[in-house]
Amino acid sequence: MMLEPVIATPATSAVSEITDAEAGALARTIPNLLKAWQVTDVEACTLLGGMSARTWARWKEGQSGRIDRDLRMRMAHLIGIHKGIRYLFKDPTRGYAWIRKPNEAFAGQSALDIMLAGELSDLARMREWLDAERGAW
Image 1 (cartoon, rainbow, N blue to C red):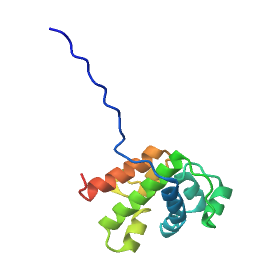
Image 2 (image 1 turned 90 degrees about the vertical axis):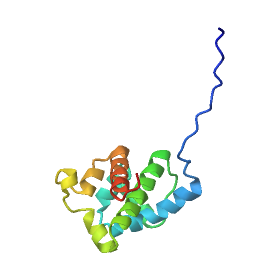
Image 3 (image 1 turned 180 degrees about the vertical axis):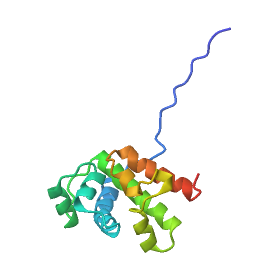
């Protein structure tokens, strides 16, 4: 019996790339979101991957500049987290307050504490937790 060659299947990503236009929209939205969450400037810079205070100040003025892949993903996760919170809490004020409240599910830490560990994976983990909590899995 002769072996049959295996035809290679090109890998495709299930997640589409965030376009420049989408990244710009995210960059305009993120300062408003972090303001609603009552995140400090230092915390915002951490959530955005170690962004400098000067760059963050420009973002708050509507001047985002070049946005790399890591930052695009961070912003997408933050919006996903926001969406998950809005699904869980009908009252936005309760959802925004939940960000800072200690939570037994996180060993007494808040969702913000988890996200402020600074890694992209921390944001992804919080987004996945919220998706699972609202029954998206």
